[in-house]
Length: 85
Image 1 (tube, one colour):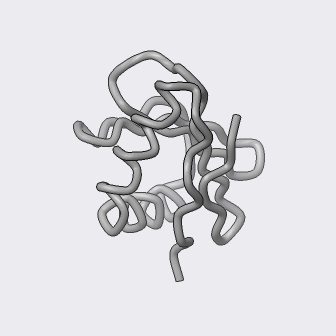
Image 2: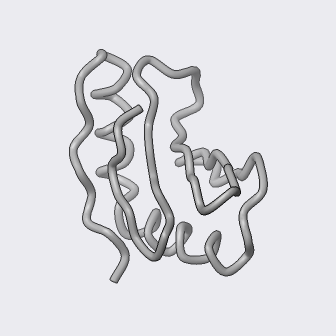
């Protein structure tokens, strides 16, 4: 699963040809979660502080995330997205 961004110990990844709706996977230590890009729903557990940073990052890069989703649906490697600073 390609890593598309990493910041403050949070790893953001997307699977190739994954199920809809468009989403990405988060790993933060022992925590795992999935966030849908358009609906902004969260499945799994992640500390509130880390989740807040992920949502802030997602708002800045929503278009890039959706383009990456399209790439992974075609089996292509997604582009790296700038981390939250």
